[in-house]
Length: 581
Image (cartoon, rainbow, N blue to C red):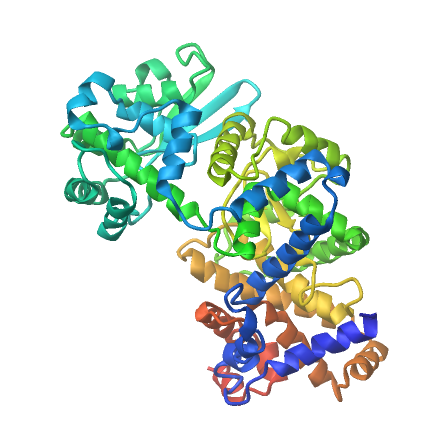
């Protein structure tokens, strides 16, 4: 599609989704995108909004590449990615017993769940060791949460935290009943529904812990709980913790003390079986393999750099856009700082100014030089069997744990010097939306390459489309990355960021717009006035929030109701009148 057709198509998309049955100044989200789901009805099983659509379309491009490219022409890490994706399609249904058998092989372990009660003492099950073993495979939200941090080259910390904020993610009877039907237990063991009675009471006690947070730093020898020392010893099995340079920070000592009191009332066999059930549940929640899109999204979540490298190879034209996007970002930062300096109500904390000044942008999550060689080395120890999804998945979970344990460095960083930063900050999360990512430890905002595709961005798009879509996204997310406004929650801060971000992109575009450019936009898009140009800007700016899901409705409503430019552009008489009071 040539440039003229691309821009005309974008304009047509915006117009096709308008629903005149809704009043734009009351329900703008529905007015602008109510018909979005109608236009995408055949794909609603794969995506339900624009952010998910970007993910789906990029995934299908990569799927086509993997199916048609010769393995001999692929780098080894791409063949690994292809093997993992292929294995995912082999196991669409979650089969807990397969994971259990794989763990028996990889860890040479026995399951307390599968051990008859009269043999438990003979085998011996140590629940702190079991908890540490499962932590190596991503289970980090049960009893205690552990996180690793490098303070500097000679000093490390392990943070031990309460694993939930407000509500504990408890098990449910439905899941235990399902396991009871699908996991055959040997004779003489304890059934899942019998276990459920004790698990339910135990998790209620955990959930009821309500204490004030108190932080304390320990050396290993001074840690107060034997089970905690055993857990850490197994977790860091290759190190002598008594002589290491690791500090142990109990983030919430009152919680851990209350937890210890509860644990002391229970026997080790119950706790071992409880942790095994939680691990099975943990793996089930991660298991999303019913469609090619879900399999590719799973592969992307666990091998993001391989996924991004393939996408970059399929879209070499994006390289030329990087400098232009950086220029747009610099203007955004200048405007955000200007707005923040206008604060006369002490709304913006001082640390926001420092964070904004030091915020760095990265387009794509890979180094621009030697990416192929770095990734070959990064994935060098991995081997996959294209017929063994369960084994491959567990290998990747363990791979991420080892990275987390050794590579989590949060020192100040220069992106031009440290090309390997992005492969040293392992994050894996199943996410079917494409959006920016912020690394708070180093204050870097990443624009993934997959965000740079229609309807958000294209090199041939007119500037009004680029600035209103990607510009608004970057401006809103840049402010949001600064933190939560004091006295407000995350959701309220996100709404505020939406207003200030859209205002920034609007002002950047229209403050420098000449009369000749206005005339040209009117010609290119078939518009009759400057007001029509402004309407198109707002429609395109909020198109990213279009979709079947209504969760964006309140966000869009908040943003447009707090922008005087919007009320003037769409002649929202009530809003303009009420702003007088």
